[in-house]
Image (cartoon, rainbow, N blue to C red):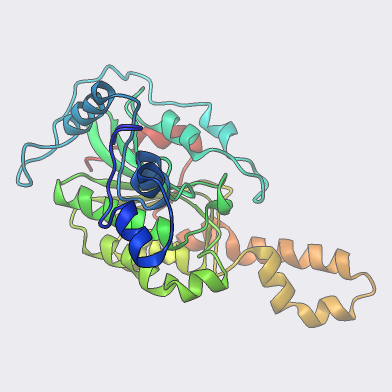
Amino acid sequence: MVDKTSQMFITGPKVIETVTGEKISSEDLGGSRVHTAISGNAHFRSDSEQEVLKMVRRLISYLPQNNQEMPPRLEVDEKDDYRPDLADIVPFEAIRPYDVRKVVEQVVDTDSFMEVQPEFARNIVIGLARIKGETVGLICNQPKVMAGGLDIDSSDKAARFIRFCDSFNIPLITFEDVTGFFPGIKQEHGGIIRHGAKILYAYSEATVPKMTVILRKAYGGAYVALNSKSIGADLVYSWPNAEIAVMGPQGAANIIFAREIAASDNPEETRAAKIEEYREKFANPYVAAARGMVDDVIDPRETHQTDPST
């Protein structure tokens, strides 16, 4: 959509005022910002038609001519697959935020990432990119917003994009760092169960290659929903510091070891010890790998070496 020019609505401002008494301008009702940031009806916006058309041309460059062909492959001169900066992007501390786009930029081919719907449901980042010249679709939790948790809008956003990629034979890569489904009365009453289920259906029904890389946190039902082995992931990799569990070590320790903590002479010290015990015994990726939930624990700096075509 073009700023200050494009507008979409089913009933215009005058009809709304007549029926409901609400007064609103055409731009505030259905302008480009409304549909790219609030409603999610539009995917891109720019200041001019020329820029919008450039976006369209770039988008089409990732896609095949039809749904029976494979996406076009570009020849790239990527001799060095080792990306040392990846080791420093994701903080070791589980509560520290970071921008997942920095991970994406280091993993994909240089300047190849085209983000889709960047203003809508910003707690998840989706887009098209290339790895070694091959088109891939990326679904990434964004720890900078809502700690990367899944809500109604992000569930819809991810599910639609997964189905879009599957329609055009585009392999899917998920960069996961998720605390769970976002809690709240508004989310529950708004149907988070129904909307969240869309992600599971989309991943389960997709026939393209599906890969997941767990960057840091993978908790609860959201972990299952985001292309886990249990719903059909072809490959699941984990970085060494990842935590894979029903819930975070802090919350789990408070529940599992509640009596021991309460009876302790130093509850805080006991709590810290139990959190570490839980993390070592249950939450680390090597335990998940031993149980077949993770295919391999990889060095972050070697993530780019994974070939999406395989």
